[in-house]
Amino acid sequence: MREVVALSPGSRMTIRSSHKPSREIALLLLSLVLVAGISYPIHRWTQTSGNSLDPEGKWTPQRLGRLLFGPEQITCYCFFTWASLILGRRAAEVARQRSAFHLDLLPTDEGARILPEDARPLIRKLEMQTAQRGPLILATMVRIALGKYAISKSAPDVGEVVRTQAEIEQYRLVSSMYLVQYLMWAIPAVGFIGTVRGLAGAFSMASSTVEELTVFMNDASRHLNFAFDCTLVALVLSVVGMYFLHLVQRSEENLINDCQQYCQEHLLLRLYDPQPEQAVV
Image 1 (tube, rainbow, N blue to C red):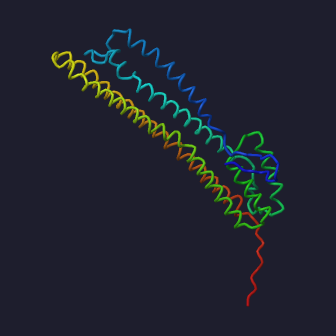
Image 2 (image 1 turned 60 degrees about the vertical axis):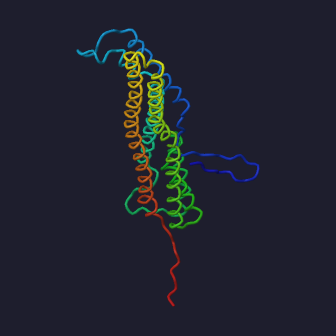
Image 3 (image 1 turned 60 degrees about the horizontal axis):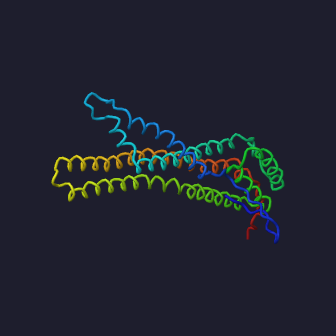
C-alpha cells in the first residue's frame, strides 16, 4: 500500500509502503547462477561417465542426462528456482510482518479506552516503535485508523477505514503474486513445448530413414523419450511449486485476517464514541 501524504500544489509527495519490495530481478539473476552452477557439473558428469547406476544398465548417466538436461528442462529449472526464491522471500516477509503483533502499539489493559485526544500521541508512539523495523502492514492499519479517529471522532468511520485498508492490503498481496502464478503456469507450458518438439522430431524422420528400419526406430525412440521426459520434469516441478504457492498465499491471507482481528480487539472495541442521545418524542 502506498499512501500520499503531501497534497499541496508544488510539494513533494511522501510515499510510505507497508511492505518490502520483492526484488524479482535480483532473484532472477540469483536463480540463473544457481541453476547454472548446479546443472553444468552434473551435465558434464553425465557426458563423461560410463558407469551404470543400476544392475540392468537402464539408468546410465547418459540416460539421466537426456532425462534431466535439455533446453526445456533447464528453462523449467530456472522458472522453478526463480518462483521458489520469490516465495521464500515472501514467506520471510510474512514472518517479519507477524513480529508487529509483539509490539506495544495499542493499550492492552483490560477496560482501557481510547479517546480522540489519545490518537495523536498513539500515532507518535507507533512511529517511534516501528521506525527501525521497516514497513509493517499492522502498523499501517493502526496508524491510518488512529488518524481517522483523530479527525472524525467516530468509531464507525474508523471501522470502515480498517476494512478498506485490509481490502487494499489483500489486493496488493494478490496482485504482487501474479508473476509467481505466471511462472507456475509457464513451467508445464515449456514442458509441453519440449514434448511437441520431440514428437515432431520423431515423426519427421520417417520419410528420410524409413528404409533403415532399425536406425529409424532407434532415433524415433530417442526423440520420444525426450518428448515425455520434458513433460515429466515440468509436471513434477509444477506440482511441487503449486504446493508452496498455496502455503504462502494462505499465510498471507491469515496475516491480513489477524491484522483485522487485532484492530477489532485492541482498537475498535476500545474507542470512545460520544454520540448524542436521541430525544424521545
